[in-house]
Amino acid sequence: MSTAPDLKKTPLNAVHRQMGGRMVDFGGWDMPVQYPAGTVEEHLRTRTHAGLFDVSHMGEIDVRGPEAISFINRLVSNDVTKLVDGQAQYSALTTPEGTVVDDLLVYRFGPEHLLLVVNAGTTEKDWDWIKSHHVHEMVELKNVSKDYCQIALQGPDAISILQKLTTTPLEEIKYYHFREGEVDGVASIISRTGYTGEDGFEVYAASEKAEQLWNKILEAGNHTAPDGVLPCGLAARNTLRLEAGMALYGHEINETTTLLEANLGWICKLNKGEFTGREVLAQQKEEGIRRRLVGFEMTERGIARDEQEVLINGESKGYVTSGSPAPFLKKNIGMAYVPVEFSGEGQEIQIDVRGRLVGAKIVKTPFYKREKKQ
Amino acid sequence: MANVPEDLHYSKDHEWIKVEGDVGTIGITDYAQNSLGDVVYVELPKVGDKFEAHESFGSVESVKAVSEIFTPVGGEIIEVNESLQDEAEKVNTDPYGDAWMIRIRMSHPGEVDSLLNAAEYEDFTKAEEE
Image (cartoon, rainbow over all chains, first blue to last red; front, side, top):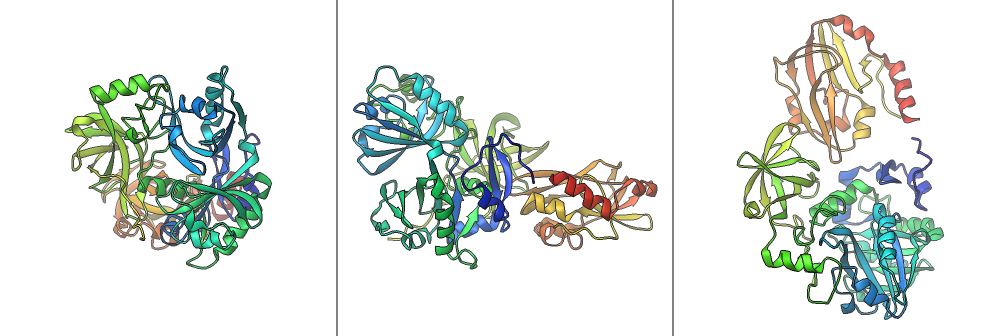
């Protein structure tokens, strides 16, 4: 298969091709949508053992200086001042209307040093947005997206596999925390985060080390064995995050949806002080939202897909943000915006699946929650 | 490399047809199932439904995508493969056998002549990949 010459490539592009990845144009990036094992197997292996994902297309923005924290804290909805060194936080860059420029992770390396990890397709937009708000603060901003590779190892076996390659005691890294260490001798940021609903790690390292890390992790995870780690494509990444009820930028959240509508009130710290969009969000919280993001499962035969219409009592009332078969749950599920008065669990809805009305009902999210071992 | 049996005719929409008298058995090709990925759902017409050549008669859904399926020839549906309702994954494992989709009584058997033979279809899929 050929590539358009203008597609961006991660440092693992050649490896994906060698391993039989089916490459697609994903928001301007040449990325594997699946490997020969197929989406279902990749999804299930991640739930039961481990999956390995190239997410090097994600953007990284380095923020340093005495006012790094206060500057970013005025641009995002969550409270950056609550972070301690070695901690990560899910947050959102907000518009003045309380809608979403992007969702992101904020890593705190020190009192004067943050790293923002943003979506691939929005990296340039985020960079411009952040720079346009940078007036006189004592802050140094750097778009370091090209310098980093990012590899996500997810699943119940992730910790034991990665531990073979590092002396950093991984058990000690709590969820949404990170350490700087070495993986197979390569200087890395080892972060206990992910986008699958499983335990796991996201490893950031210099781009030129990507192949080494990828191959070593596959080897350590015994990837040719039926219970070994499997390389996974973007399709499995999407079905895994959907089962886990996580928002995907451009689908559940965008510049027309507010954080409160998207059930992201938990990352809106309205009392932390001024930030972009705070007033609108505070007002919306006071007055109540009109529509809400919900999860649904199909009760009749059919698969909902993104952007299809939602009908309630025969009237068009909303739309599907993400819809797909859920390989682990073995159901057809999705998320949708519906009016608040119809957003209760058990509410019956219909999805217009290419002209055919198919029954569904609103259910609790996340659809899938892993059992925590304790 | 996708499997392309010699004894079938092919459409540029990646369906195959096996002709026996005026009855055609139709399914999707190995190349098509491979590009779709894991098939999870197949929607088929009812016996008695009539279609013109190149009309959509149903759809195949994988985890990731929906793809319409088109009949290479016109006619009346005389049988549909009901087993695909519960075992859609057969489309991936046996696209030319167990996963046949419909049998159609052809109104114009001559339409088959305009389809591709195995060698032509193989060239066609190679060209699509370049």
